[in-house]
Each structure stands twice: as C-alpha cells, then as structure tokens.
Length: 249
Picture 1: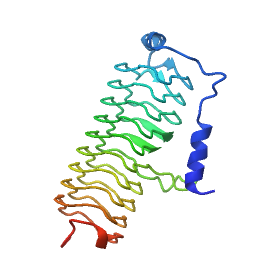
Picture 2 (picture 1 turned 135 degrees about the vertical axis):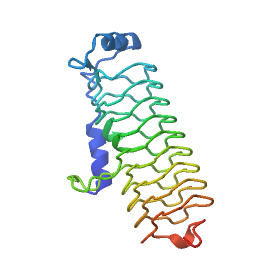
Picture 3 (picture 1 turned 90 degrees about the vertical axis):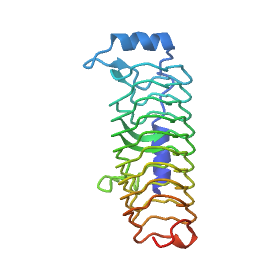
Picture 4 (picture 1 turned 180 degrees about the vertical axis):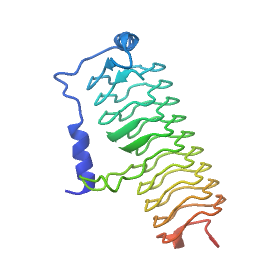
C-alpha cells in the first residue's frame, strides 16, 4: 500500500462515530467553554460540529481531538496550542484564527479558508490542497516530513494549488512538501527549508527566497520572475530548463 493510500485510510478511520457523536449548537459550545479550565477542558472530542458558527470563540481550554469541523466557521477564533490530530476539517473557515503552536496530523483541510490565519510555530502534516492561505503566517512552522517517524510510508504536507500569496513563511520547514501549482507570489520565504519538495508550476513571482534551501526540488515550469534569490540554494534541482526567472542563478 503506497503512502497516499495509507494516508487516505487514516483519514477515513479518523471520521467520527456518528452513532455516538453529540450534536451541539453554538450556545451549548459557548457554555462548555465557559466552564472549562486548563486542567478540565471542554469535552468536544469526536463531537459533530459540522457547519456550526463557532467564530470569535476561545478554544484554548477545549479538547477537539477527532471532532468533525467540516464547513464550520471558526474565523477569528483562538485555537492556539491545541492538538487537532485526526480532526475533520474539509471546507473549514479559519480565516484570521490563531492556530499558533497547534499540532495537526493526519487531517484533510482541503478547500478551506485559511486567509490571514496564524500558523506560526505549528506542526502540521495534512492535506490543504486548493485552500486559500493568502496572508497566512507560517513563520517558524515545522511542516516538514519527519524522516525518522514514517511507519506508514512518507507522510508530508500537501499544498497543491494553494493560494499562499503574500504569506509569511520565514524560517519555516517545508521539506519534502508538495506545492504543485501553488501561488506564492509576493510571499516571504526567507531561510525556508524546501529540501526535496515538489514545486512543479509553482508561482514565486516577486517572492523573497533569500537564504532558502531548494536542494533537490522539482521546479519544472515554476516561475521565479522578479523573485529575490540572494543566497538561495538551487543545487541538484530538477526541471530548471523549463522554469522561468532563473538566468545566471
């Protein structure tokens, strides 16, 4: 079984058991959060919270492990420091939310609104394909594949066709990630680790990649026009001949 099939199986197994899932409304969630403490967090584990308006709430004292958040509105909410492993977040709205220092593993967040979301210092291995991440903050994020812990094969973050224009990825680890057809125009990518990543047809126009490591990346049809490439490492890249904006680099 290849790594993609294994990840798909993991995502399927992470779906909540609907026969036991609680159906809560916004007011009930707010009441649980009011009563929660650091030592006794609000029990939202594996709860069915699909399509709920949960915007502008503080979830820092909540247990959301394995919750179903598909289509939920968590914009402007605070989820900093939470473990969101195995949650279900396809089509979730986390615009302007604080997800700094979160852990998100084995999760599908495809087609989500993550614009202006704060992912700084987070650890994410998830599928975020086709999501809007304009102006998101991924500074110091550790989203690279952990090569010492791959029991199911290569597990890596997927950012295919993601809009990361104007995002802050300074000092992020995105090693072995997939960014096929991603839009990183005008993004801040200083000192980013992109080792062995797939950047096929990615758009880096006007991006700042100063000091970033693109060793062994795939850059076929990638666009680096007017990008800042001071001390950027392009050793052993594949597809340089079809990329744009790399003359004399």
